[in-house]
Amino acid sequence: MSVRGKGKIDDGFDNVDDALILFNKMIDKQMELLGVSQDGYSLNTLINCYCQLGRIGFGFSILGKMLKLGVEPSAVTFSTLINGLCNRSKISEAVIIFDEMTKKGYQPNLIVYNIILKGLCKSGNTDRAVRFLRLMEDRDFETDIVTYSTVIDCLCKKGLLKEALDLFSEEKVKGIRPNTITYSCLIHGMISKAVEIVNMMRKHDIEPNVSTYSTLVYAHCKEGMVSKTEDFVDAMIKQEIEPNVVTYSALVNGYCLRNEMDKARIDLQMMIEKGCAPNIVTYNTMINGYCKAKRLDEAVEL
Picture 1 (cartoon, helix red, strand yellow):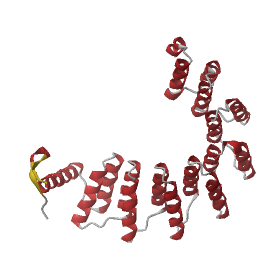
Picture 2 (cartoon, helix red, strand yellow; picture 1 turned 135 degrees about the horizontal axis):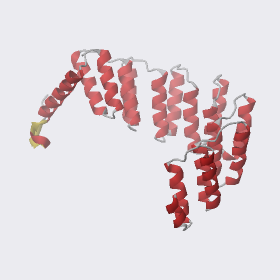
Picture 3 (cartoon, rainbow, N blue to C red; picture 1 turned 180 degrees about the horizontal axis):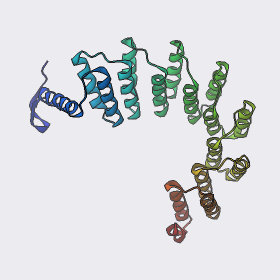
Picture 4 (cartoon, rainbow, N blue to C red; picture 1 turned 120 degrees about the vertical axis):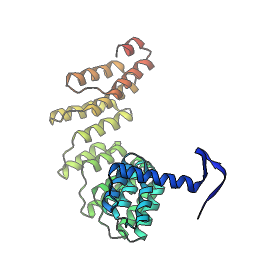
């Protein structure tokens, strides 16, 4: 069906059909230049390339091309488009494609479910994320540690700590063993129980790693409890776990927030001496701290 416009549209086309014809010719030309065969594998590869580049519209155009050629889209086709949409924060559109995919009888795999779940959590749709988790269970889909850690992290960030702990207990009942990422999510959300959570980790034979300790340091600094963080750094060193740029930057930021610039400078110096190169975030934190403390000469020195 022709879609006619009133007069000429932008770029001098008489109607939308003319624009679409030219667009399809462009797609055909690009495929020819790239040497892309008109089979499912090649077209899926091209869709993936466009999605990786953030050109989701072109990805959907290739899907249209597939249908026109009579090439049946596969679960991979839809999964690639869903991932591309989620990476561009187009979560609602991704869910629509997901629903369409399942209606047409394509079975999404665990990766696709986790992509949607991560997208919902990233956009702050906590209730929807929990409902989606239950949908996975209703469809007898085996959830994994990534699934649970994603939702637990989302709940903690929203301050829904009881719900996060309930889900944590649920995953253990199901025989899914929490990992350092799961525990780090809980630490981040429940700073008052941080030490208790670390002890729980050890009880389950999971040793805290640099990521766990960095989370402890960051969370305590954020709450203004910088003095406690030195104990965590000491514990790291005793266990021969080298603090990284995230750990040191969190310490520096903690002292800057308290206007204790001399202590922040000591940590910056220690960081350099230990062979851990400060990054742009570390230096910006120090410069902002010096500026707020009206110590402009020292800010310029950095």
